Image 1 (cartoon, rainbow, N blue to C red):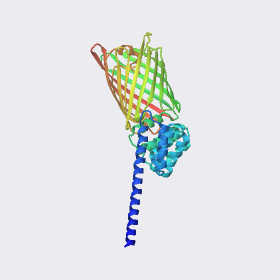
Image 2: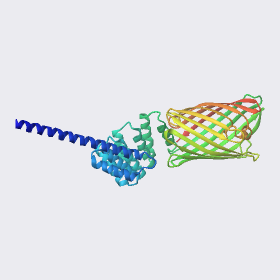
Image 3: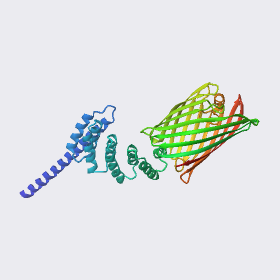
Image 4: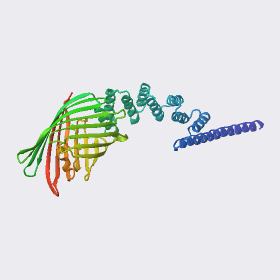
Length: 421
């Protein structure tokens, strides 16, 4: 009987001991979870206390050494306080213990990019891609590292492969378009535009251009010669040449500038045309531009224009809205393109109101047309043939006011042929 009582008390004590241990563990779990929550909430505030968060995380790590979230927030707070060696240690610790923490990979890769340790960053990125092949952020980091290394060839090759995995993604489409603008190549081209006018005795107008483009990693430069001949009542109204040069200059972050200069002594063109625009790229396929145009006509009158534009990649579509703010009469142009292969393969549709200072076909009459109404619609396509030839066609219907409440229909047929080498 006595032995039974002893056995009973031993079992009871053992059960109470197990229950107390479980309660302690549960309490500790609650305490560490609460502590982690406090750290995370503080990091989301406008003025986080990083040093206090580090102390809290060190305490949490001591209470629960296998709780990797404390190691991760330790790394993040050290990272944000520029204690990079400690941050790197904790990021690597988390990855080594349990690679399920994608954030640890991202933070470590971002550190490597920030510190220009591109080779190390590429190793970690490749490891992350092997573990998470469908994670777009890691794919974009690899592309970014190639770009920062100036390895355009591998960057383009990898962007093309990622595009197959993420078709119609605006970030990928935007980067691919910018990369095509950085490939080293030369191009010669010819352009012809004929304008027919439904008003008796007016037209046709002809515009012919030949140009040479040289494109390199820094950007591109184009030299162009334009020839115009405009007829009226079977006589030549104006004719002559214009010399033109333009350039696109890229910065490190894929932002770029556009510069254009043109001169002519013929009444078929303005005397001087100066143009500048700055383009800035944003995330999710957005782009914005701001620029100015300055035109001196043959009679020495001048016109100044401010232009503002915004563009967006929606899958394989590129949409752009640009306005020209000019005296008394604004101009607005909306452009849409659908790219189906390279940047040279697309279908385009454009519509607009008012006269644009960038329209070469009506440049000689810009000072008069800028005060008149016009409504236009354009459709066309371009395609790359056998890797070298670029063929383009654009048809425009322009309902142009030539005097108050009197309109004429102008049909433009434009053809271009370029050879890329």
